[in-house]
Image (cartoon, rainbow, N blue to C red; front, side, top):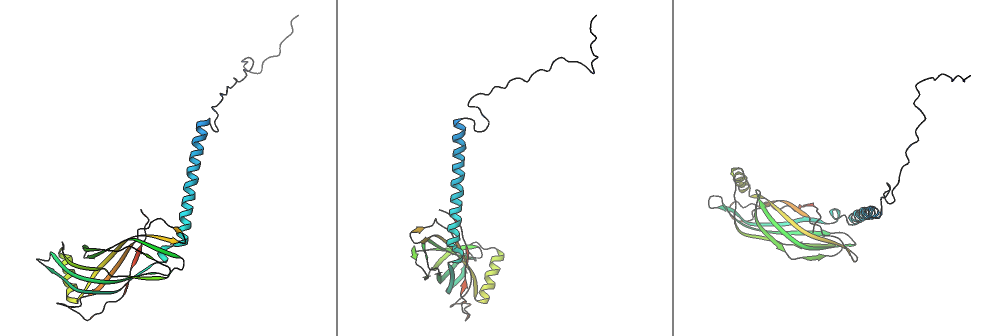
Length: 232
């Protein structure tokens, strides 16, 4: 007599199928992926490390030198003997001389002035440019530059600018901007920094000292503002 089989408690699908065996190819791993991938990864790590070190070195140099707190610029004297418009307010005749002091109060830092370009501007119009000779400024030193702007220049002044000129002429005091464009390097011992390209802004009120519209007003020494940049 045949044995009775126990009833099934659900659908029967046969024996379980074992998982397929995975095959791992040599040299195609997910962590590094072979010699070329390792070299590429190493290259990027070296580059990132160098960028970080260069940035850290630049930050340290900046914190050591901090040029914006070191150098001070003042226009101590200005003499304007001619400043007039002719030929339908299109030609400016001018004669302006300045004494500009540059003070380096630091005990350890010297400064190379590789380029000194002075621009004279009136009512947004540049009317002259003067270059001074390059020089080295030692520790705790004050240097005096004396740029002279003299000649004539065609200018284009609108109605607002002409009104400003007429107002200055009546007062006998002219609002003249002098901007210095510099290329400087700093020196600490034998170490020299990369080149900075600061711009010096001097907003001057200069009295006319002779001629029509002359005034007895004296020029007031003026501190200049510094805008530091880094360049080549």
